[in-house]
Amino acid sequence: MSDELTGLCRLSELSDPGARAFSWGDGDWPLEFFVVRQGNSAFAYVNRCPHAGHELNWQPDRFLTSEGDLILCQSHGARFTIADGVCVLGPCPGARLTRLSLTERNGELFASAAELDALLGARSR
Image (cartoon, rainbow, N blue to C red; front, side, top):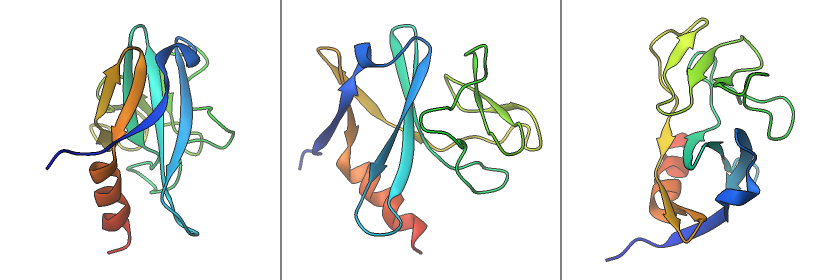
């Protein structure tokens, strides 16, 4: 059985560096995640701080430090590497953001519907 892919955006629609938030699922508690661009690469993570469990951003699509080199938790100042989501500064050193798989086809980014559904379901348990 092949996995259904859901289109997110074109890589060229993201600033370099830049990020955009996405939501998956219906109802009051959808899965919130984001995609970060760094050069010609893109990385996706669940929008959840491993330290406090809340969303990383306070403003729409604001996930990066002012330098654009790290992902920033707006609440506690934790900083995470873009390529692997590891906390390198702040209250949770060594903790990781939950990474999502991305597929790129002809410049368009896709996420796995099955993976998104599994993460959405895991949150409600």
